[in-house]
Image 1: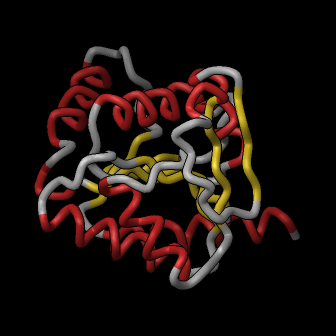
Image 2: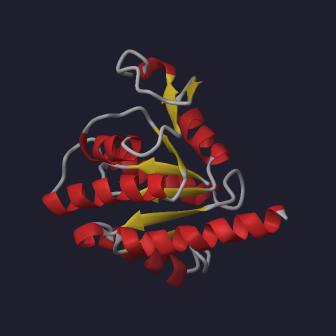
Image 3: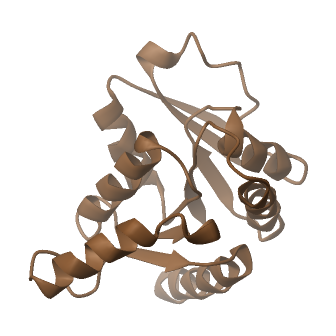
Length: 182
């Protein structure tokens, strides 16, 4: 399954770092391909480095203007886009599922863009790993939007507390994809 991974380029807390490493390992050991934005910094880099210890199934999606920052990561496919907007569209077109570790405004933009595209350009779901309650504010905002009729009842963003919990969600999603393919 193709899984987009969104995460901060900062290191975060020790627990966030542990989750990033655990996520990279879990995705690789379960045979997933990851799509990411070419960053080797922070939580994103930690997840990528751990993933690449077990698998080389990495696809990079990066805007042309950031190619100078691209450090030639080993990847099976490189997708260069014209803009950041096209980048997120490419992520969603190629992904079966998206996962977000804690991150800054870029990660929040990716989560909300994926949520908006869900059911349109993106037929998957997005799970935010709520390490140390990091996404409680977003969870509250989505719930308020649902209460007020501004966000559909089945929000495309789900919140999980652990990578193990996410692993169960991904296993179910993989089975769903396999049964539809048959």
